[in-house]
Figure 1 (cartoon, rainbow, N blue to C red):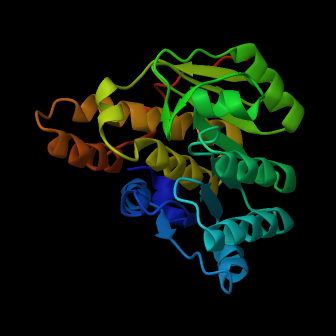
Figure 2 (cartoon, helix red, strand yellow):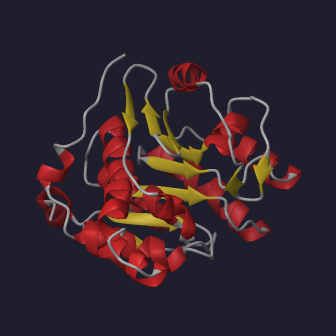
Length: 256
């Protein structure tokens, strides 16, 4: 248990995709936060005002969620609330790419988390995609990500075989996890929920991004002891719910 999070029980407002909404809610609960999934434009501003952090996930777009996400992001900026963007599938379609560019233009995000294909699209590098999944063999210029983070004043998280986190000054490579995380829908979405929960509990933006990303990888390693994929998925929630401050102390960061 992480006392800082359990004592505060931060409210995390998700405007996320319909495929993984339940998993994101349960992962937030597992870490000690309190999830809410309010996306009606008539209550979005009020809910952002109550929330400790906001998650915007572009996995399943439709007109009303796009309107709500823009409004939530602008409201969070106005109120000084931390906000994380999960630009799911950017580069896959014109609609998706244009909308995410609109979000980036209108909203100052605290953290942006994506796979290599998604982050390459955001920073303007050529890429290939497989719908909402990372293309096999996708490579990334991490110095370009570092520069992008510095220029935009946002923490960037690139998930993959080795996760990379940078705020443009500090950076961290996380060699943790298992290939089985890619066999369960929504582990990336759940990672965004973990990061948001750390943010909502008052952790610094770089630390929140590192810790949230690390915990998903660590949970994957612990759950990998399970034979079936269903048991593995359940094991992720179990592992996160049992994480402690000692787990966070395993993380090594550098300032290069």
